[in-house]
Image (cartoon, rainbow, N blue to C red):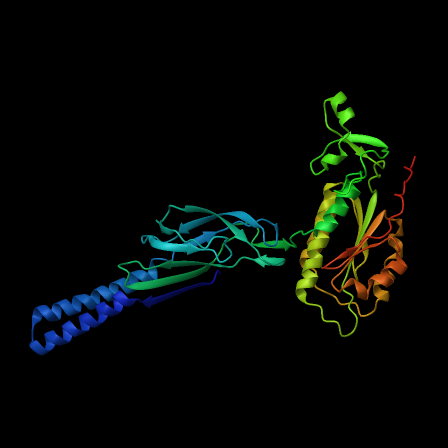
Length: 380
């Protein structure tokens, strides 16, 4: 049974009418004036009738709001709510409907008649990761005559659809990490503003891409081909076949780690997963102290993102809990080690266990000396 609650409070016009009616009634009794007594009684009858109508006209209101199964924290998603009036005769009149998690706080005055549902389209926003369950909706009205203010609370009906949303961490990539991934996944060295001397030797040419410096354009080849050609000093690097992602919550004794830093690490991990998923790169993923899993299909990456949505920080008291998990990742072309504690507390031990690892905390990253990408022979 859905919980409902209605609060009705008298407003200033109602207070004024109450005291005026009382004064007129008392004056009529003292003066033995039937007209004054009648006017005073009419005032009280109007107050009582408005109180009954205000308390009842929202009772039949029901709201249905289908929710998506998944969303990212802080990102809005569209919602189409349906308002229905189950009352047999009384319309829900001149009320403002509000969803507590709606992105917009604007309230529209509505009237819903029995048997005539109304559709509302707006956007919801879940600010934090985790499981978001349907909250109560609020309807406010000053009908009739503005003498009372009625606030009605009810729970959304799911009508067979999801009544909760799994909110995943909102992806975030620091600028330096984004550039590193661009270089890793595009299969070519990215030219910087400090391009080599135009007269220097180059190994090959490629088409001009947005972001390339103008100094790198090879004009003779561009004029011959009719398209801008850019010098590239090194051959394209091979794309990674498999990468590793390790997320840990190690912190030395006495080090205070705030929840916000852990959430930021989860956001970076989510961004890495999405980037490698879209690039169709296989990932070995481990969220310490849990075991390692291999992600190849899109459903595997979705399951990993759902783990990030539900995970709770599990502090690792010893650095050995981190380093013992790293050697198996030596088979990966590159391994990203993420921790919510500053790198200085765990990076030396991580590098000793896996020298080529890229270490990331919430403020910086240290890119390891990557070896030449490994090539793996296909099984015949």
